[in-house]
Length: 378
Image (cartoon, rainbow, N blue to C red; front, side, top):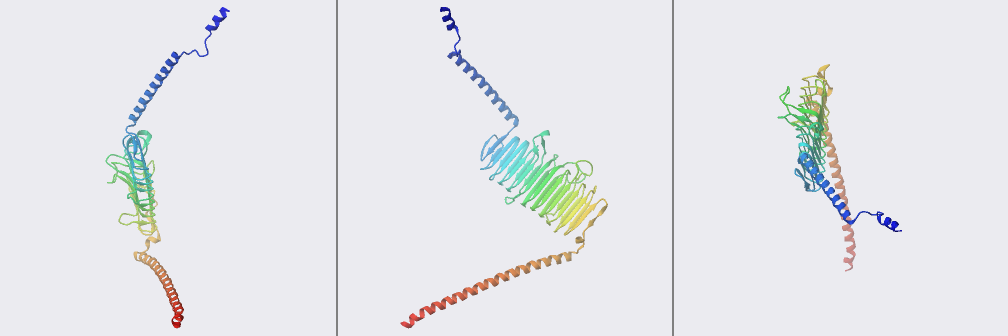
């Protein structure tokens, strides 16, 4: 029995950990957790430092430098750059290296990516995007800009630019001075070398419902100005010609266009211009170099390799006096319609006045008849 009692005393209890050992374990775990937290914090700070001025701001409250926002707006920078979101319910986002995004107005978005890109909006419901991604092989776009909205009253304009600009040149897309305009550049570059004096690249759509677009060509000037016009330049990613050094315009600053189209397909060093309108169409198709297509007023002018002098529609052969007479006829019809409307409104007004006068006269007579017996009785 004594042996059994001694064996019971030597059996380990169910919880062999003493209070002292528990305290030691807790201290060890706390030390390990603290070390991990310190390491993670150090790693996080290192990551923030390598991001080089990354920041975020919402409704005026932010973390990091380079981001500013007004009430209800959002600004974000991932990389080195600046983002400013003014107005209400706007967003400015910059990614990459030395990029800048800025919004001002209502319900608008500006995004700048790549290297040295800039995106700006002004007005309501506008969107501007310049470049994409980050610096180096993870991004597209270098030293380019996109502007959507040129005045506070501009609405629903879109500008995008995915290209590049060499030092000393500019590459910009611009949509505004109105509403529903689109200006875009896809892989077009401005360079310091080229056969033409112009080394810059500008794609702009101003007015109402205009589209100015270019793809693959370099050093182009593409513009659509007026109402419901399109100016399009299409190059080729390989080979010659690649749609470079062209001037393609539907409407000009001196003379806007209406319902007109200017198009260049794979030509180089060409001038394509459609002005006036309505329905002025000018196009060059697969002309290798030095093509010119100009359409002034209603009609169609097309230049092709098989027909270098161009094909012109019969509308273009009408004289200026005939076009003026046609416009005068339309003006007279509109004027006559307005006169008829005015006369109808005048007649209706006179009839209403006559009825009112008759009603007033009847009321006066009835009143006079009602008061006369009383006078006779007296």
